[in-house]
Length: 485
Ligand code: NDP
Image (tube, rainbow, N blue to C red):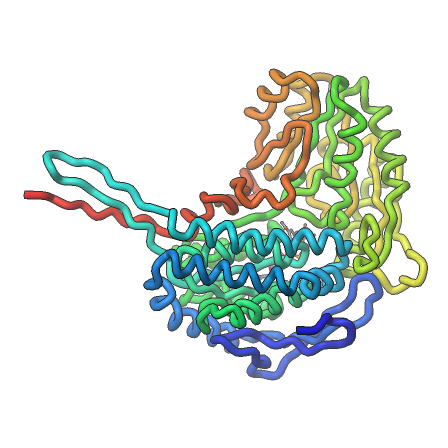
């Protein structure tokens, strides 16, 4: 397997083989740091999605009849191959998404860990027995759905892909995966690596294709038994509508507007360093990005000064050169982010750092936005309510715990939150009342956090991924009652 350095042709992975789209369609994959074409990827149409679903349906019964331990061993074999190809995969992920190489390496490490975590859990995921009257009893079986569809976004193709694919495989489902066309390279490569590692043909199929064509067809496919989607709110609603037509379970992870509550008794050195990273990681294109700070009034100005200084020091560049921050994914995403900044300025916000596009030396064609710190932001402004998905941090003021909590909970989203204080009672009270799937106290993010249940409340979606909870998500419980006469 070679590094992608020049234009490469990438095929679909269906039924154990790489092949072009039936209609021959291909799409260019661009390097977001330069705008140059990195690769040409086969673009699946509905007929290719049909092939992938049929292959998965054919492969799934035998896969589910393997012992859990055998399936676990398959997952460990994939993990080993991912580790062996870690450099290639990280390089590809960095080129394709624009993220710094160090972050891409961390993503690949987490990818291997997903296969190891669920490889190890495969033979420890049990049903239950329940005593009934007399000698009678009931027992539960955790049965796979059958074929699961996975529509994944461009921000963390490997990490987000594996977060849903691996637990699904573990419990005996076969998968059809549709990566985003902006960044399909690493996950397609993973499909090939899985075959090389011995995963039976048809168990993992990867069909890059446009969302409106291949994605919509997969979401509405009668041959899919469960669908997991990570992406934007509007697309999530479409995917859920399709699932409703089929009366079929979905898992939705739709991003957030995650708040960090910073109080005057917080360790500001630590908060500044961690919250800068919570924003600039992947150029702010992270579902759990720390994109809102709610600062206690007495500490607001000092915190803004510190953050502004940290933001001005952030280095921008091509991901593979490992700067602090790379470009955003596309020209459209850059324009969307700049639109939010312009809208905020027009609404009366101030800029404490950044506020514009950037052009690092030699990268005129890239899609760069300076890390931007917006102040004098009112809680009801669009930039404080909607997911910008770029390096834009809004800072709001609060007078006390109650007003901070009201601002924090006052958006449609609820994915992640953090509280910064040296008062443990306050931290725990707020943690219990914050509307979020995960709350961090004096920290932010869990470096992959594979073992920690992850997912949102409100319009951030529903269903829990990661950890042992994900195994339940990808199974249905069957109860068998045994009447001992
Ligand atoms: P989308 O939600 O449109 O894309 C996510 C995935 O859904 C991609 O694979 C996409 O395919 C696919 N898709 C698009 N349309 C459909 C459809 N009708 N049916 C089924 N699948 C579809 O996000 P965008 O890329 O357009 O980004 C827009 C915004 O969404 C971002 O600015 C951000 O706010 C949010 N977002 C959130 C993410 C998160 O991690 N929570 C990740 C990505 C985006 P394709 O891209 O190939 O067309």
